[in-house]
Length: 364
Image 1: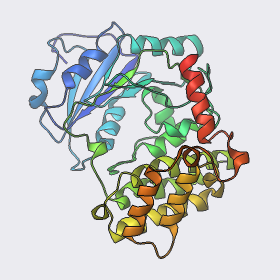
Image 2: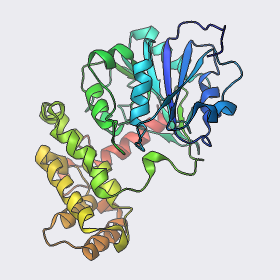
Image 3: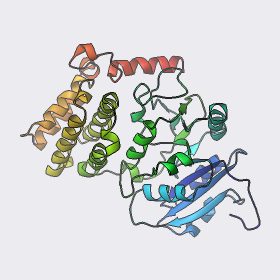
Image 4: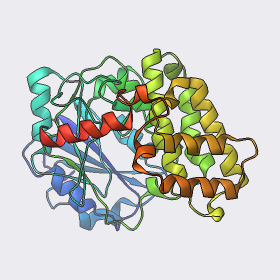
C-alpha cells in the first residue's frame, strides 16, 4: 500500500493470484476498484517478483497490497490459500488474474448480505464472449437459501462470489493445495452442504471469465490420472461419505457427467489415450458408481453407452475412440432420454435441464 495513505477497513478481501506478468491483472484490479465499496485487493505474486507487475497496478494503491508467494506448484490453490490466510475483512472473494467484474457487481452482492444476512453470495458467471452461464441451474426465481440438490449446486465447483471469512476459518476450509486441477471440489462440497445460507441472483452484475490469455493453468491438458485424482480424494473423504443418499446421488451424477465424460469426450484420437489413462478412467467410474450407484440412472443413453464401453474389462484404445465417435454423433433421442424412461423428468435428467434452461431464459 502507498506509504502515508490509509484506506477504510475493508468489508471484502479479494485474493488475486498471478503467475505470469503478461496476464490482464490491470483489468481485474480496475474492475474491483470501480466503485466506492470498501474492498482490499491482495495480489499474490505466485513464483514471480512483485516488481514485475508494478506497471499493471493503479497509481493509488491505498486499496491494493502485493505479496510474494512461492510453492513451486503450477496450481492457484496455494496462492489462494495464502491470500485467504492474510484476510481480515468479514467477507473474502477469489478471482483469476484474467477475469474481471461487471460494474456494480460487488455492490449488488453486498445488498444481499445487508438484506438477509447471507453466508455466501454466489456470483453470476459470464464468458468474455457475453454468454451467461446458467450455473448453478437453480430453481426458477429462486434467489435465496439454495439447496445443494434441488438447486444443482454441485455443478458450481468454484466458489466465486462473497464468502464469510469466519465460515472458512472456523470450519478450517481451504483449497486443496498441490492439486493441479479440481482443488476447489472439497471446499465447495463443504460449503454447499454445510447448512449455510447461500444466495444467488443471476440478474446481478456478473463475474466475467476472461478468455484472451494464451493459456490458463486450470485448463492445461492433463492425463486422466491427474484429472481423476481430485475425484478419488473427494469420494474417499469423510465429509462426502457422510452425506445422505440424495446428496451422494446428485454429486455422483455431476462427477460422471462433468468430471468423467467431460474429460473423455474431447479425447478423440488414439494418441490421446495411454494404458494408464484407460485404467484411471475405469477406476474413476468404478469409484463413483460404488459411492452412489443411482448416479448412473439419470444419464442419457449416449452417455451410458460410452461409460459402459470404457468400463468393459477388455476395452482398448481403438474401441474407446470408436465409442467416443458414436457418442459425438448420437441422435437427439439418445442424447436426451435415459434408459429408464420414467426417469426422464427426474431432477438430474437432460430433459428436465433443458426445460429449466427455457424457463430461466424466459423468466429469470
